Length: 161
Image (tube, rainbow, N blue to C red):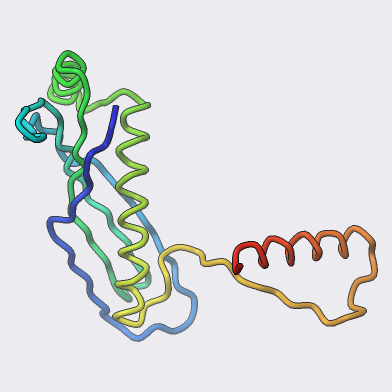
């Protein structure tokens, strides 16, 4: 079940009000439609599916929105492609494994784009970013804490270097 592409079709963002006080950030993604599509791979053509999705980040109360429309391109055996398309047409459902793969692909791409776009219009990041906490010497003397800090420093050094 290879995913062969993930593309944006439309991106809109809006900052309505100044950011102040408590902000509630809601992220959502949904598959809007599934279409059979013929893909040209070199000289060969292969049947696949195009999953149209919508990713939305809402900043409340009424602060801003980021909306991304896109598509995930998916290839599989012709029989499997037909089954998935028929299932979607019949009851708007897909196999959990396929849905997971498609949504995770779209989320990975959209979260990165939304993070960049939020900075461009001075909104908080839509996903939590890692933070570093530095404690002063002598704040905690528990041996397990020192070991945890040592492991964290080692991980940070391996990430940096």
